[in-house]
Image (cartoon, rainbow, N blue to C red; front, top):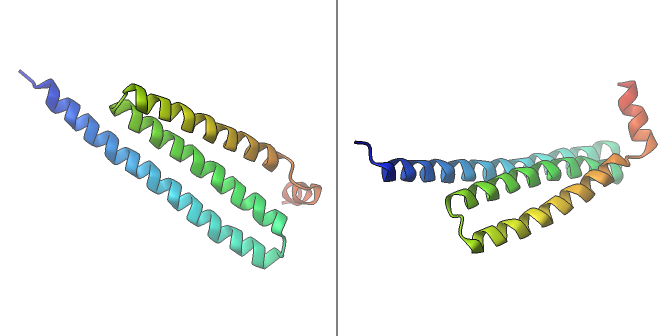
Length: 117
């Protein structure tokens, strides 16, 4: 007969590896965003365009971080970790919402350039 605890430990190990992978992807998104933002800043001398570029990458990184936090809570669903997840999810959701709202209001020149391309 198969031992259920073996599969549970295997699943927990897989979730931890996947969580670490999501956190690494989030860090990579921030690093790529920083590099691309610096390129935009130096090439176009536009701090507003650079800000929008970095904002896009930060929003993506926040989504990966939230996914990693959700995975961490699935393997340890006690009340304390659920409360922490709820607080983190609310904060990151608000950050992501307001960041997305700001990114929607790109200057007219930026939108015009994108439509011509």
